[in-house]
Structures are given as C-alpha cells and as structure tokens.
Amino acid sequence: MAISAQQYQSMVKRLEGKRTASPAMEPTVAAPRRDQIILGVDPSLRCTGFGVIRTRGAKLEVVAYGEVPCPASWPQSRCLLHISQTLRETIAKHRPTVCVVEGIFYAQNLQTAILMGAARGASLVSAAEAGLDVYEIAAKRVKQAIVGFGGAGKPAVAKMVQRMLGLAEEPPADAADALALAIAHAQEGTRFGLVTPRKV
Image (tube, rainbow, N blue to C red; front, side):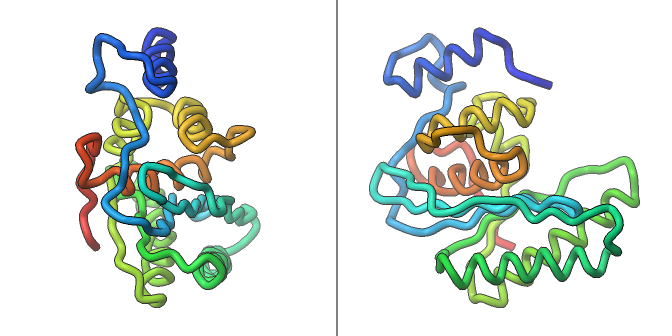
C-alpha cells in the first residue's frame, strides 16, 4: 500500500521547512540525544539490507549501506553464513555503537516466518558478538516515523530516506529499509521521536 500524492507533498513541504496542517503525520530529522554510529538491519534470507549512519547533533550522515544478496540456488545454511560474515565485516569496518533490526512480524506462511527468523537470528548474533546493544522496531512504526504513514510501501520509504539523508539517488529497497530503521532509532528520545525501540 502506497501513500497518496497529497501525503507525499505534505512530507516534502515538511522536509523543506514549510508548515502544513498535520505536522504529527510528517517526518523530520530531529536532533538525537548524542552523537553515535547506528547500524540498521532489515533481515531477509535472500536479501538482507544494512545501513550505517552517523549522528552529529541534528545532522544525520550516511556512512555506508548495501544489501546481502543470496541466490535462490544457495542452501539456507550458506545464506545465513553469508549474512553473518557480511555484517561482521561491516561492523568491524565502521564500528557502530548500536544496532537496530526490524521487529518480528506476523506471517501467515509458516515457512516464510521460519526463514525470516533464521536471517534475523544471524543478524542478532553478529551484532551481539561485537558487543553492540541491539534494539528492534516494528516495520509499521518505522514507516510512521519516516513516511508518516504506517502502511507505506517500499518506494515511499526509499524516497523519503533519500531526501532525509541527502542522497544523490534512492538506495536499493532493502538498504533503504535498513537506513530507515537507523534514522528512526536516532530520533528516539527527541520530541519528534515516534517510536520507542525495544532492546533485544
């Protein structure tokens, strides 16, 4: 489900510093509580997204982002190893101070839930192994914080992440979701924060 043209224009005006009639439903980049490096992870067996941002006062800077693709021909064990190794390398290179992952969601398909849970587990272990505090935020909460609408689709999230971080182009979908997680965590504890990450 995507956002309407009116909702999108409202969000653009908010980011440009213009006032609108419904400020509570619009995203903004708020000053975080302290400078930190945040790793966001959107776990998926076939394409885990990751994004690293640095907070400097009210400013958010992109450090790195990308995806961890795993071909359909790979067995589950190889995918999990690849996810874990990539995240370990990312953590070692960029030295994040905290990690935030997408919260568990309800899946009607049991097999899908199992595979997602496995990818999430590999991500959690990689972060915990590095001594990072790990938090989770529900996907709808992240969309609400970034886009202003909990049912927003991936294209809307990617577009707003691009604008909020001043990127030259939209990041890949799963990487955008990971960056959105990091942004939402950075806003926690500010007057603009719409989410309260849960430590896991």
